[in-house]
Structure formats: structure tokens, C-alpha cells
Amino acid sequence: MRNPVTADLFESVRTVPLLQETMAEGAVLLRGYARPFELELMRVLGRILEQAPFRRMLTPGGHQMSVAMTNCGSYGWVTDRTGYRYDPNDPEGGKPWPPMPPVFRELAERAAGGAGFAGFSPDACLINCYQPGARMSLHQDRDEHDLSAPIVSVSLGLPATFLFGGLKRSDKPNRFRLEHGDIAVWGGPARLAFHGVAPLADGEHTLLGRQRINLTFRKAR
Ligand code: MD6
Ligand code: FE
Image (cartoon, rainbow, N blue to C red; front, side):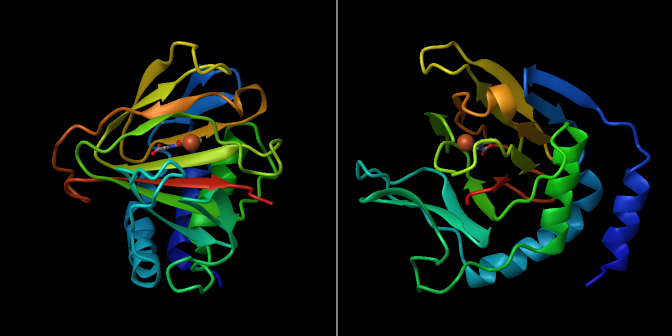
């Protein structure tokens, strides 16, 4: 269904020059790209959280993650004692994840196109919630079947320090500040780069309060 508000927003931002920063070959930051959509993103995020609340999952090693997660779309990324996987159903309740809202999909597809990955069609959106102190250790995103598709990552709320390394865990990561509205897109030669998020510094964001929310769009299948 056409949403006149977001349709007009997408039309108008089409003409705004991209503020693009390169993190590595195949990895770019689109500064402020999501900002025109912040209220609509938060509105639909609220609907998703009513159906699939944030929860802190267990790693296969039995540790509870400091980041709380949920998903929307045809598949959701989950972890438990048995391992990591994409699951069409929310393990809490067994029902399908909430559908991916059109504004999520459209924003992700346009950001990917702007970064040089035309034709991106995400089927999974992992939603991460960081409270002060929460972090994500260095990892590769390698549970997706089709590694030719990029990943699109939208940052909302408190700023974070993103650690972006190389293809080996031992490669020393560079640091990038991700602010509210920034979108990171990576794929191609950077698709399997190690990356993580440093412990979130405390603060108060005007719109989101004491938290950072990250939407990560993938093609899982
Ligand atoms: C985060 N992001 O920004 C965690 N993975 O909260 C990720 O792990 C990530 O931002 C792959 C691509 C982009 C990302
Ligand atoms: Fe990741």
C-alpha cells in the first residue's frame, strides 16, 4: 500500500547528494541517510515490538548477549545453545516474525543502490537494541546463503563506535562513529570482514533516550 508521507519523502531525498564515506573497499557509510524517515521508522518499530519484543539471546557457548534482539521479515536471525540460524518463526511463541514494513524495505533497497549494490532485496531484518555498556564482539556475518548480497545497517539513537577490521580476525580494526540516521552498507570484497561494536557509552538521545537501535537488513536465503 502506498504511504503518501514516505513516498513523498523518498521522492524528495532522491535529489539530495549522498554524504558517502568509505570504510574499506565494498564498505561505505551513508551519513544521515535515514534521518528523514526517523519518525516513521520508530512508529513501525513500535508495532513490531508489540508482536516480537526485544530479548537477550544465548550464544551457543551459553552466554547471554548484552545486546537485545528481535527480527522482522521472512526470516529472523536467532542464536541459542544449538547454534546460530535463520528461522522463519520466532522461537518465543512459534509464530512467524512480523512482516518487514514497506518503509524498512524501501529504505534498505535505496541505501544499497546508493552504495552501488543495485537490486538488493532483503528477506530478513535483525533489530538490535544496545543499552549503555552493551557491545558486540568482532564477528563475521556468514550465516546467509547468498554472500553476493550486501548488508545494510541503519543506526538510530545513541552514537556507537563501529569496529571494522579485515578478513582475518587478527586484522586490526579501524574505528568509525555511527550516529543516529547513518547507514552502513557493505558487500563484495568487504562482505566477510570482521566487525563489531564497542561498549555503548551512556547518554541521552533526543528521540530514543538511553539506547541505540540498529536495523540490519540481509538476504538470508
Ligand atoms: C550493529 N552490526 O551495528 C551491529 N553486521 O549494531 C553488525 O553486526 C553488522 O552493522 C554486518 C553489517 C553491518 C552491521
Ligand atoms: Fe554483523
